[in-house]
Amino acid sequence: MDYALESLIKIVIVLGAVITAVAYVVLAERKVSAYIQNRLGPNRVGPWGLLQPLADGLKFITKEDVIPNHVNKPVYLIAPAAILIPALMGFAVVPFGDVLNVMGREVALVIANLDIGVLYVLALSSLGVYGVVLGGWASNNKYALMGGIRASAQMISYELSLGLSLIGVLMISGTLRLTDVVNLQAGTQLFGILPAWFVFTQPVACILFIVSVFAETNRLPFDLPEAEQELVAGYHAEYSSMKFAMFFMAEYAHMITASALIATLFFGGWHLPGLDPADDSLGVSILKVLVFSVKTAFFLFVFIWVRWTVPRFRYDQVMRLGWKYLLPIALANVFVTGLVLTLMR
Image 1 (tube, rainbow, N blue to C red):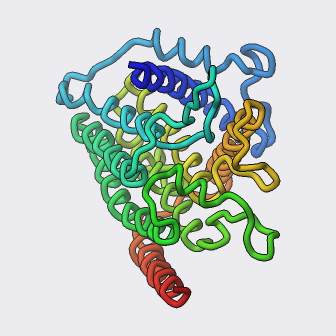
Image 2 (cartoon, helix red, strand yellow; image 1 turned 90 degrees about the horizontal axis):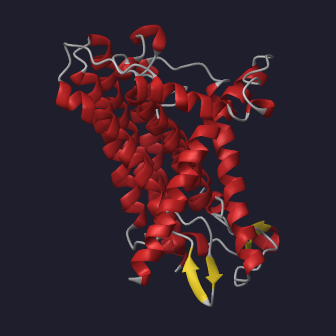
């Protein structure tokens, strides 16, 4: 019972934090894009525009919910949940800290410390495309359908590179548990100067993973499923009110999970050079959570920065990059990693 209650409390806290973060990442995107384009951005609702996400949420809730007559209604209604739920579930296995001592009890700062954590994340990331495809098909709109088809083709192309980019990390760590992967990155290496982060031992895998998650989250320059100049709004063209908001929230929830995974797998998670990995005092435990949060926030900024800097690829360029470049490089990285590990034995 204690374990169930502990898990429920962690689920409520993490879910609330992720949904709140989704709202404020949207605000951050609008602020950063405004800065890049030399304008002000949201600054009217609350001090410095900080209450803008609340106003946007109220707008979506009170907006008229229009369901076109020509849609396949059951599938049309299921699609937004089919993309949002996997996006929120992905964070369940991501450790956002070490342990926290609460009234003499050690609480692991992860909802579910699964032995197959990496496989769980990959499985959920591939499920998200079903919501996009179903939404595009059920809308009975040729532009929405084309967006859904593009999403499925893009997911297949980059899911391979995404999975293969992690093989090198898993070969070195010998585990699928994300907490163990993080703990293996504690301390220093290379003459005691650089941290023992996998970005230094697997730099090619890190770049491949980052590019692949950009494609998996349908962010520019890989937002071909939306491509408003070509497809009006893509797979969610026929959606309004909270159903549209659910598609919108899913994209940013995917971004948060992807940023957290980049920090976890390649940049040491909650570890920081000079921070004792074995220290589980309250202050250090909170500091580790802050370290993880700052790393995740940095990669969220990278997502936003790239969106407003790099122009959209053409569809043939997206396919060529995935199949002719990323996939062979990922396979070569696995081969070289295996060869090096064999020679070091």
